[in-house]
Length: 67
Image 1 (cartoon, rainbow, N blue to C red):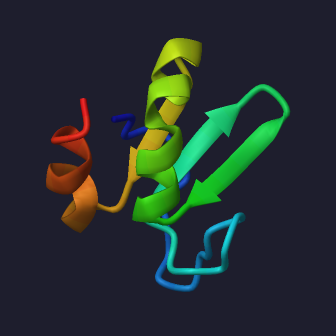
Image 2 (cartoon, rainbow, N blue to C red; image 1 turned 180 degrees about the horizontal axis):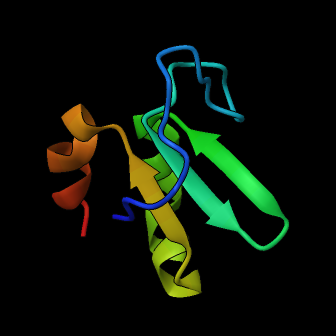
């Protein structure tokens, strides 16, 4: 998980469903915000693409388990 990206705020929302964002995904076209559910749903493809992913500190442990 990347530490050099813009930190997430409590007010950030998932671009897919509007739930609280747990991660910011850095893509060439721009950043996407994902809740935990949608990040997990798309994690395999994101890892294939080698994108940068930044999480809020309290969610890092949960996302590490996905790998």
